[in-house]
Every structure is written in C-alpha cells, then in structure tokens.
Image (cartoon, rainbow, N blue to C red; front, side, top):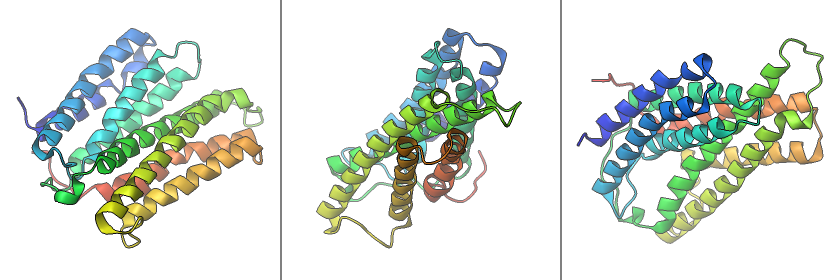
Length: 258
C-alpha cells in the first residue's frame, strides 16, 4: 500500500489528467468515470493520514480533504443533465480542482502527530465540514462563471435569476455547512483552550472573513439589491477568495515533487 503522500500525489496527477475531459466529451458517464480514480486515491490518502493519527485529527488535513470533497461534488455536477450550464460549471470545477490539489502537493506543510486536544469530535467535525463547505463554495463560483460565459457575447444581455439559481443553491448550502463547521470549531476551542475564538490565529480570522463574505452573498441574492450580473460576478469572486483566505494559510513552503 502506498504512503499517504504518494496516494495524494497520484490523486493530484489524476485530477490534472481529467481536466481536458469535459472539453472533449459531454458524456456524463465518461466524465464521472474519469473523476473516480482521483477521488479514490484521494480517499486513500485521507484514510492513511487518519490511520496514523486516530483518534486525533491529523495535522494539516484540510488541503488533502478539500480536493476529495470537491471531486465528489464535481461528480454530482456531472450528473446534472437537465442544466445546460452544468457542463461549463464542471469545466471550471475541474480546473480549480487541479489548481488546489497541485498547490497542496507543491506547498505541503509538515505532517506530524497532533497533541491530545485534537482528540475531540468537534475537531473532526470542524475539519470535515470546513473542507466540504469550501467545496460547495467553489461549485457556486463555477456556476456563476457558467452564467457569465452564457452571455459573454453580448454584455447588454440580461441575466435572469434562473441563470444563477445553481450558484445560489450551492452557495447557500455551503454557507449552512460552513456555519456548522465554525460552531464546531468554537466548541472545540472552548473545550480545549477555554475560549471560543483564538484571536491571534490567522486561520480563525480568515474563516470568519469567509463567513461574512457569504453572508453578504446571501443578502445580495435574497434582497435583489444588485443586478443579477453583479451578483454573478460576486459569486465568481468566491473562488479566488477561498484560495487566498482559506487555502494559502494551510500551505507551506514550495517543495519539489520528489
């Protein structure tokens, strides 16, 4: 059996290989089968890391866990045959999946055994729900990009609510998951350190910034304050925001592949 590091490198390689697939075919079965090997190796990497650390949470598991959830959600997007924007959204998802997974391979933080305070169900839920929430946010951005691409030929063409309905659904679901993750993180922090928020932890502050970003996202959609096109651009901006505020803090220095 390969090590967790090798398994994740193989997963990242398979994610990169599958990026051109939706540009070549729209067959949903082929797209799902193309994603499946990478998701399986990604799951193996997560399992091997947890096997070493259990019952504690492995250190720096988020960069490995997040591509796994994004891969699963991309497979769900590929299943959506009725939505004509889903294929474009899938293209965006796969490109971003390749970027995030390759970054995690090239900029890994050291993996070492966590200390006893990581032995908490809230810690496990915080990590898993946070990674899943980021996956939902990325898919939301992908659907927003698909809506903008649909009308790229005519900047005066009006976007309708139906054009960004997919973006709103995925973003709202991600917001709910992210909120649960933050609650679990605060409970874990309170039980372990006696305070719900560690203000000198940059990762905590950027997590809160992401929550406020998507609080505004929901506000704009539910109130209709901005035009549909402006809301689509705001949702699309979520992907680089997630990379800068949530992914980069988990990455370490550059390292060669071998």
